[in-house]
Length: 151
Image 1: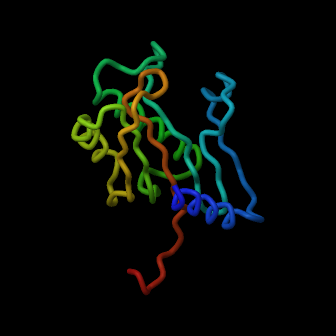
Image 2: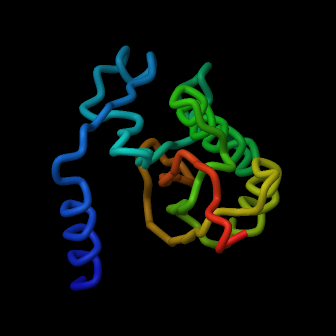
């Protein structure tokens, strides 16, 4: 718990004086949900948790792989709206209601990246909203020219 509080304290200190820009997608606006899909803080984009709901039913699909695809497509849509790609993600956190789905999720997840993978946590969560199996949040950074020392 202390490390969790420490991390948030560092983030708050880093954001002091930073201009924030909020991103709300039409589906979030239409549902009048009390959050932004993502928030820019400097060159860093913080993505809210996304779940994979079938647009036709408003529920998760019966198949875990289909749900994983939907949740990652939702995350990608937010990144595209911000002018970024999945390859700009530096950290992803996956909440999963059944950790036995780790392999099924990874099979889909691999296909969304072409330039290596971000750091990631995969956490067993218990029940998620709308009986979703997965909720995914992330942090992306707008890339600039790499310093010669890390090439």
